[in-house]
Amino acid sequence: MYVRAVLDEGVMDRALLAPQLSISRDAAGQPMAYVVDAAGRLEQRSLVTPSAIGDQWLVTSGLKAGDRLVVSGQQKARPGAQVQIVMGTYGTAAAVPAATGETPTNPARSARELAAADAANAKH
Image 1 (tube, helix red, strand yellow):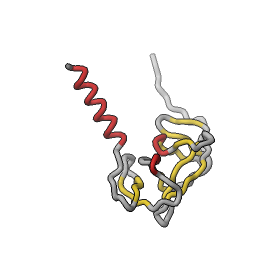
Image 2 (cartoon, rainbow, N blue to C red; image 1 turned 45 degrees about the vertical axis):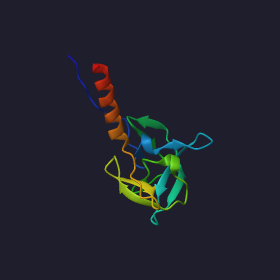
Image 3 (cartoon, rainbow, N blue to C red; image 1 turned 60 degrees about the vertical axis):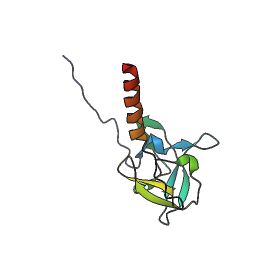
Image 4 (cartoon, rainbow, N blue to C red; image 1 turned 60 degrees about the horizontal axis):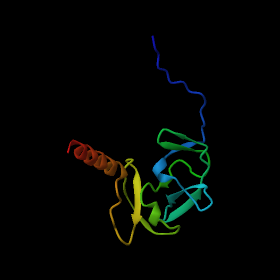
């Protein structure tokens, strides 16, 4: 007989979970993320991420509830850049440069497309 159970070991009231796609590393190797401020400009934040839980980082410092995280396009992001908010993969918002109006890539969709292409190639 087997039992599967989920037990709460502890609760961190002031911690947040952030998608791993939204967290990158700075030149010193420290975790960081881009957040869109009220004026629509990018702000770079240093984070404390003690562990990963599934496909998310546990963030204990550097973010607060309600922050708008950039989940796509961090390679082109620069602090202070004006951005436009568009719907993203996680049902939240993604930031794109306001001047270009380009559409952000959808990482989840791209992964599905790659998997479908791999499956199609395997049949041949």
